[in-house]
Amino acid sequence: MRFMIIVKASPDSEAGVMPSEELMTAMGNFNEELAKAGILIDCDGLQPSSKGARVRFSGDQRTVIDGPFAATKELIAGYWLWQVKSKEEAIEWVKRCPNPMPGTEAEIEIRQVYEAEDFGTEFTPQLREQEERVRAQVKKN
Image (cartoon, rainbow, N blue to C red; front, side, top):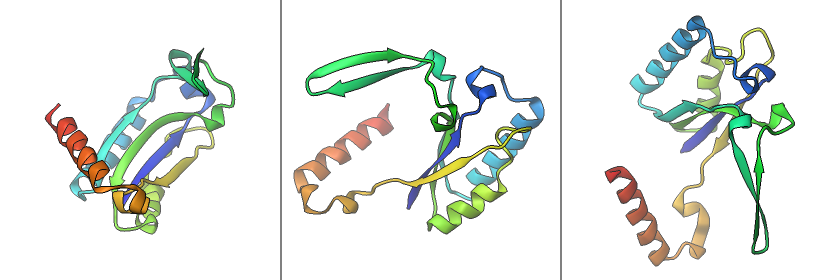
């Protein structure tokens, strides 16, 4: 099972305040543990929403909205992608994580990633082949 572990933004992360050396060391050690355990697929921090954009879809229309975005608690400051046996295992790993926003309350969200079999018959053999081609191309890149 794959899970995306989402670190919620804070006023500091949205202001572009960089983490301390102490936090970067603690997170680096945690990431190393995840890698050694064989569950870490990918991870990264995200720039503040002021450097981002959103594209709103309404039928055939596309509207670009430049950041920053309101509702900081709904924004993402970083993520991990993990391969674990269960949601419970993901929860146990998150509980071991250093507080990503020291000095304030922080929240980490755990969301399961869809797998091919989750889509049922709508995910036809042709679509499965296409998905495999795309994943193979991504690995080459």
